[in-house]
Length: 145
Image (cartoon, rainbow, N blue to C red; front, side):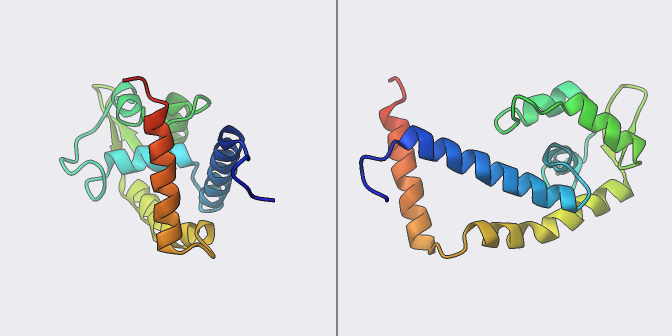
């Protein structure tokens, strides 16, 4: 039963856990973990690195700090991408995306709309926007001035 007495802390946490679990499972089926996909995005000239510059692991952690989960290990994920030939490491310990890495990033990106569609099934854009507005207002209400 849905009513206004339901605890937002529980439901927002449950929505986060289940949505992240779903997204991560979908990406794993495409051959990457979500943190690996983020690493590739942050190194791709076609995505989040228009300058096409290599990055150190610390620079990647900083760039992804807003969305990494506590259990995400960028160092470990980078080593796996290196071992698979999706990244290369230069003499200054900077990581660079390879052609194979770009192909892997593109493959996941192609599937992103279908993943989003599955999450948003049965929810209109208006309902989604209203839900976001409510959550944003709750965040504002609970953020110290």
